[in-house]
Image 1 (spheres, rainbow, N blue to C red):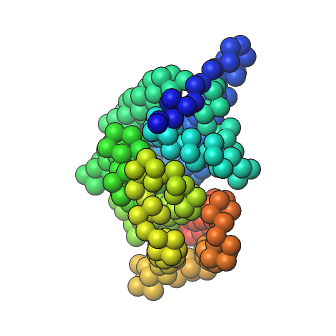
Image 2 (image 1 turned 45 degrees about the vertical axis):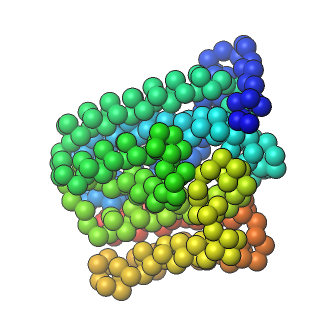
Length: 324
């Protein structure tokens, strides 16, 4: 039985434009959209000071940001549409998932505030909006290296395929897609503004990617039963509880390795390690605590903290390294 046969949205009438805006803001998970926009802060602070206020650079970043709103809105919306249609959101949120760490109000399709049809139309329109602005951004960008155009196009096409379209998370590719997509939100705008890819920016992009991947990894751990019921093949579903812990431990090690290995090889400044010590501490705390209590949602919330600490560490480093 699908969720659509169990959940019958009855959107409330009245409340006007402000209420509708609030419903769609919850649909796109506006808090997470804002978190993703921190990628542009990393991009901007990762430039030389004279480049940051260049007119063409600022205009390109602005155009990319306009498109990013649409792409992220489409990703979040179409994921929820699929979650309602196949029943996974019903299982993961309506059974025992509605807690302060992951409240049901984030799912207006489940609370009855929005219909699936309206949400789907909004998702398609958002994706078209994003594609339009990214096309304009790349056409007038200061630089258009082939690799940056490929990353931008792949980000546009693949980011929504997590649980919609190709449904890559249903065939075991969800984690790889999350890492690529989040990292690409740094790589794409930097590439079309600066036209190059320094090792430092690649490291910072991967750290941003791991920040989002590690949130999803623990979220997927909480959602094993619901995801398994609808055929979503996350690592948490495909492996045992012990195997999943090994996987999360491996991701934790890789996250730290993204910092330590390039520094050891001299590809990035050695004091980047010092600047990111708070991130490494929080990441180890997140995993160590999860091993002790098996509380996936609490580990997920600590992942949000680790992600934001990552951004702070990287931005502070960039400002000190490149200057103001």
